[in-house]
Length: 375
Length: 98
Ligand code: SF4
Image (cartoon, rainbow over all chains, first blue to last red; front, side, top):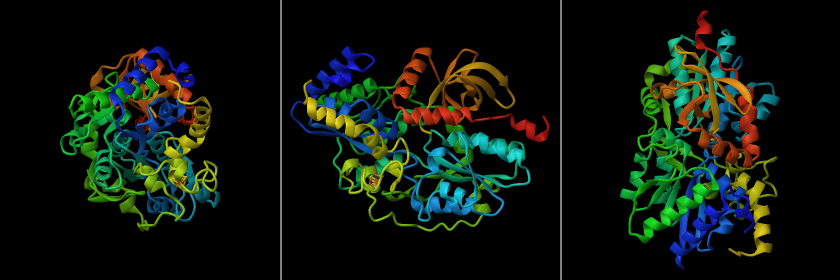
């Protein structure tokens, strides 16, 4: 077990793997890890090769860059190309292809696009250029939405009126629900996202266990965390339980971060529906600024095309995001679609399943093939 | 942007703007700590930082664990660290001459 020797605590890893083998027996299990960070850990540490072949991990929709549809990227580019506007974005979003190229290409054509680490960096740019409108491309799950919220509150408190937000924040539970309702996939449980849960806590996931009857375990990002979460899922099934459990108690509290939740409630409201790449329109799955913050809402201040654009034909990101297809099963994976020339979003973000697999998975699959599954 | 990065609070800067100076990936940067308002943050505490905001308080062992795990993922960590380095968060009050 070459991979295990690289772990922080190889003995603990071996114990967990043995426990997973014993619990799984000969039955087939399919678990989804929701978060792109987990997908990354699974490939980086060869976890799928340490699991019994009847315990399968499928990757979920938890990469916020990957789920932004083409139409919204086109809207962002339209905003960036509005004369006079300084458009600010996280670096991850700069290379996401829209139907007329990416933000990076818009920048090359002359748009003033700047990448920022924080919405507060975008606000600082607005303070430094009081004569220019500055738009911030807000993306991310509940992990980043409170930060956008605080930034909007700051803008209002200090009457910074040349700053606005193009809001694309999404929420994590509705896509899980959409996947549970889609007929393509039979899942036995979920490895729940770690960092988003520091904000929302564990209670919102009860829907998954109580309504859909699937066990759910919130997990940390270390390989041992993921192995332990898988063992916890199997133990629930074997003991006839179906609950939301927290493997990541070191960081995640059941009630989440009440202050961050209060900011979300104050600044945002749910959109009736929002288009997700590959998953289609999902009701009440995304956030917009409340009416009282209309002066900071770029969608109200500017003309955005707001057109729904179909994904490129070759792209199978939707299937990958739903866990219905493994990255390497996409026809263009590694040939036409690479991190340098991404066709789909899952190849752009380092948290995307295709990029993670491209960077680590192939190598590990080859190693595993030559080494066999000697556990 | 989903990856949190651990940082250690070096100085609580400005209670009005809820800013703190943290040491993160070997550089000192200003972050916002408004989301940890009720956590009695002190100098020396470790926090998990997302896009310039402290989102949760963690202990030192967890901070090391997270950093080690992050470094192993390679590119994503390098990108995040590079992004942190170019961050220049300043008090909003400076906009109104404060
Ligand atoms: S290989 Fe490219 S096009 Fe295919 S699913 Fe992955 S990101 Fe999408």
